[in-house]
Image (cartoon, rainbow, N blue to C red; front, side):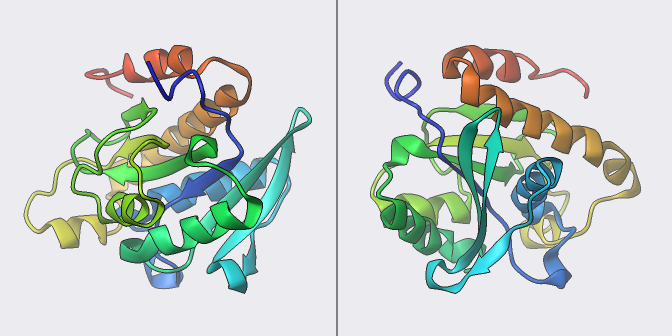
Length: 199
């Protein structure tokens, strides 16, 4: 399938909102995954004001990756993503976005080479700014909103979710690392086969 064969990971972006008030909210799951990946590599994200985000370069078995967290707030994520792609002169085929998803049960993941924004404002912003939906994304389920969508995504994790969260984050980090060395379609197939399974 077009996009899967050509994916060359260079830039891994986690979506979320900056600031302590949002740090442990469901909408910041992308941030949490990138922060965990950086921490595992002994690295710390540092603010790059000209790029409107925080970034760090890590080496995983001699393969260099740029990790990036936009600080534009979720609805304007695309502005910062476009800036860093332009800064490094990279293409959307080098980009993987890690994002929360209400359409997926909590803890389950979907890895896609491209696709629609699915109502997610962060993905809508990226598509609008870079002019294409052909970039990879790792969607991590936060479950459906019981009442207000805004209250759900900006709410903190429940006690049960918090207990499962480290495992969910570790599985996401593992999937990202595998993409460095394995075929995208193969990794996506294994990740996506977990649909309907308990974590």
